[in-house]
Length: 139
Length: 139
Length: 139
Image (cartoon, rainbow over all chains, first blue to last red; front, side, top):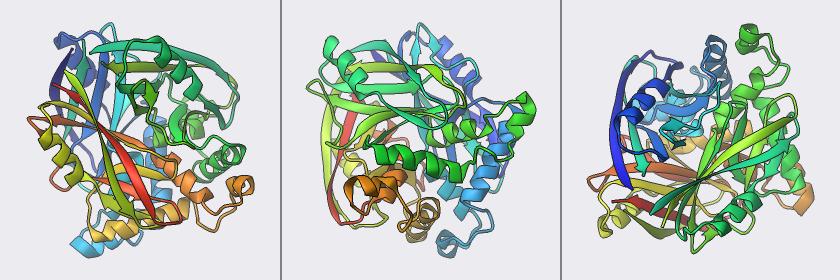
């Protein structure tokens, strides 16, 4: 049993873009000696989320639309009184969805479904350089 | 320390049914040699979720009602333009809630509260045969 | 590799209060011998949640407001017919957000962002004494 910590780095587009991080995770998994265990994907920062999704263009529009209904960009947020910024909705969306998921892997393969990818969700209001901790624990 | 991977298999009813998988997890836990650690429950597929809930008939109606408010079955989803299917809302609900939870266990017992069960949520629009990865890591 | 289980205990205020548990986790991490791995934070009970957030006063008002929109306190819940109580909305909110998160740590430090804390969300309708399982797995 061992712990292996990697950091995935990529650039995102503002306001609800999604980024498929599955290939990045698979690449790291192929390089390490662990065969079975879990990988934890954790967003560093409080205005983005991670979940799984069928990564196709339709849902890339649907998810931000639903989030806009739940926490509208032009809503009134007390967070914006604290900092005089414009991303109260980004924080609320990120906290609601959550910053991390944990995915089992077996025989060097993630246990995802055929139409299921691990996606990063950018809720902030400017393009960002992002970092996701990708930590494997297993044997 | 060791990793033990099991697969829970069960049938679900379409459109928001819940399934209490706690007894299935407890049965697997009773059969393995680990005493303390975590169990990760991971939905294979992108139209179902896992969380904890007090598993009683009232909440089995309340959860789909709230999800219907957030992402209505008859809403307009770009996903459905991609595939000409009818389950855009199923995908959105699944991604919002998330595909997995991780539950610690101690002395062969899950650390759940008295009124807290691990539930699988079927958001898809037809009855399904489902698989949940149930992976224990511990000692 | 080892498993170390701690229990965080604290008191909460009813109806959407947030509690920053980051210092409690960091204190436990400083006392154990593990250097790298994951910590799983798990709510014992079905009317509270854990996520990360920028823990500042504005968002402490924004999160309950958004949750009130999703699952209003005065809404009609079948759960309340089952038990004749008043916390249907508390259960729905807790299940939607989820009971646990998993945070990697490296060199004795949680991999949180600068403005990111681990928060406990009390959705129940009375002040409570709460317990969160805080389980470290690592080396």
